[in-house]
Image (tube, rainbow over all chains, first blue to last red; front, side, top):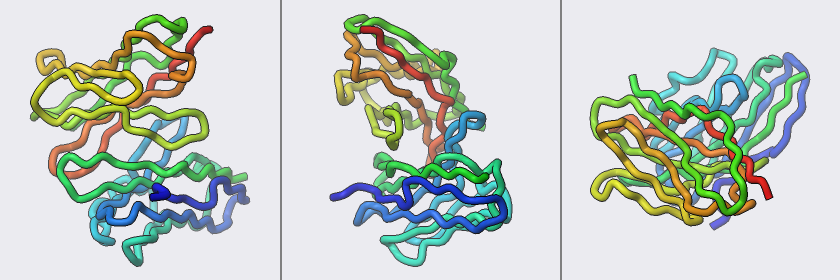
Length: 114
Length: 113
């Protein structure tokens, strides 16, 4: 298995532009998580899905952020409009539906908003 | 609310020396605890996890951690550090029944040759 796949690995955009980050979880995993990592705030859980359904989006910072999971093998995190303070590394992780399952992380997308 | 504290932001050790990274958690029940490692430019990799049973947990790369309920701690140890262990280490607790991880702020390990 290729592990969790994220694209792009790096994204540089200008303030006000729409940004879409993509994630392909490990096949057979029922849970998908989106995290944001910054120097100031560390690793924060933004949202997670179970069987393609958003379960908890309390970590989504504001309405500019949205996430979807149209099927079991694909998820997107969208920022519209982007702001410089959104600059961070965004990680996607997936987990199998068992009580003691670990989360497997993708390599992350480094987003820079100018 | 659950929380995780890693009191050491940076730690420097010499290659071959022993290592202990501290982690304290705040949680009402028996937590599910994890240690992850992040190498530069990489995602997080699980080192070990504790759910129940033996309080001394063995992980990959020669790491171990001990769960001490009385101290609300889950410290990570390695008897002899290798240069390749230089990375950032994160402790995490899972809020029971939610599958949500709460991460500590991380400890960056530097290894001197």
